[in-house]
Length: 172
Image: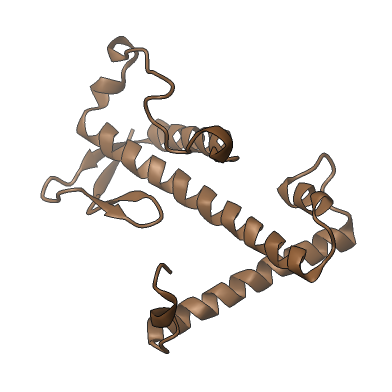
């Protein structure tokens, strides 16, 4: 939740729910770390194992490890969901625009959703691959049509999400 610390401490129902969910998530991730350590981790390496191998075993490093894993989980989920939502919105408005005959070479650096340079997102390739697979799955089964009475607007949360995006799916 993006509130100033003073407001986040007010015992409102929303703040209590957020705190409870945050605590549950941190415990779940912490349990995952414990299971990985006792069971020896994945063969071939996964993100958790790589982070465990590079982190010293101190209480501060454990807190940092939990923070890093939650960041990867949340950032990866939000970026993929937002990318898929905006793409479906564009496809619902003009699917012919995306046919092979209508495509123009894109400039790789024209869109920088994952930053660049030393601050470039470590998961950009994963997010783009995941988005492409999700979209291929959806579009192979359905077409999407806009619900015309709604206007889609930008909503600034962690990423610029489509607010008021309502689509109808039609089986192919």
